[in-house]
Image 1 (tube, rainbow, N blue to C red):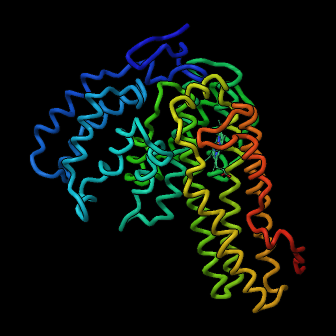
Image 2 (cartoon, rainbow, N blue to C red; image 1 turned 30 degrees about the vertical axis):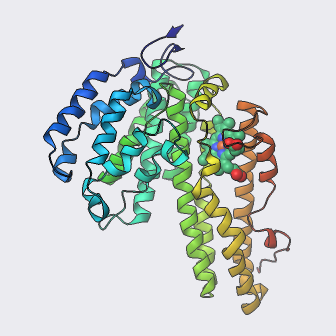
Image 3 (cartoon, protein in one colour; image 1 turned 60 degrees about the horizontal axis):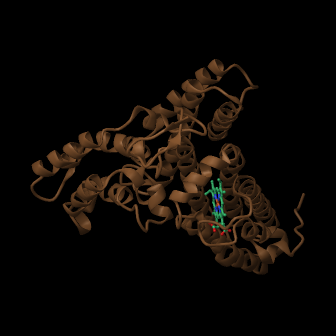
Length: 404
Ligand code: HEM
């Protein structure tokens, strides 16, 4: 069964895993979005400030984008959104129009857009401010994205029950469980799973800062109307938020080592390793991607590979660079016994990071086989080699003796 509409169909029929999203099945009226943005522009005389932003018709625009996909939003709407962007205040006053300057570029990058634009990365980076410290914003964002992913997949399971939707919904529960330091209960009826998910989603929602809620809502801009792309985007956004937090913890660990605050550095590296423990549950979600759906997503995301991930690169560059150098220097100054515990922690982090890369390689083989990647590499073969490169090459060569 196929559904053809103004979103470049035909798309697979039915809403849920392997089909279109619930929003696509519901449909999104292009005229409603176009009319609403026209009206907003007509009423907005000077550069937009907080009052104008509050009146911006986010809801119909999002409905349209989610119903058909970013690639099929329509020239008229995309051009109007570019006009909105041109009306925003520049320089220091841009923050008065938050979140429009961070969000709009991702609505209008159909041609030539990169990985950051695909994930609305500037928007995801934006909620921290005077009243919301960066670490709290990032922690809230992880929780909000995980809760939203779980909600999407539990609804999909409700609409179209089956083995893969059930496996995916449980895997999403595992992601939120990890963030809550909770356990995933043994397999149960779909209704019980939905009840538990509903309770956890509601509890999570109560703790999320309002600006993070806005960012979570606006940052889901798929290229296609496929349900699986929503899952994919949320997983990528969760990984990116994770990489960023891991990078922050490791940068602080490096600075502590430079001050010879070795125990502080060990605690910070252990924090990074705890964050990385979210990777296996996240990949359990990703592995439920149907290869046929991913083939369609790939065709719409050429040139937007995670190989462009700045967060991932930052972690690898920091570890093999200044962090490794700082721990070796601290060892020279204080002696190997003093730094043995932090070295052991770095070793555990290295193992977990390489395990993550091996999992990614395995999933890639399962989902796309050995075809080249959208980032221009050889694909799985490139990933197999990359998985063998340690985070701390100089430490990996040294045996670590941990004092009792
Ligand atoms: C359907 C699942 C996925 C497939 C088939 C896949 C495939 C690939 C391929 C083929 C590459 C090689 C670069 C290229 O040419 O594009 C790559 C790189 C990469 N992917 Fe994925 N990927 C998947 C999911 C993910 C997820 C969920 C993340 C999380 C952020 C991710 C992060 C990365 C990173 C960081 C790289 C660069 C690795 C490096 O340079 O060592 N991928 N991916």
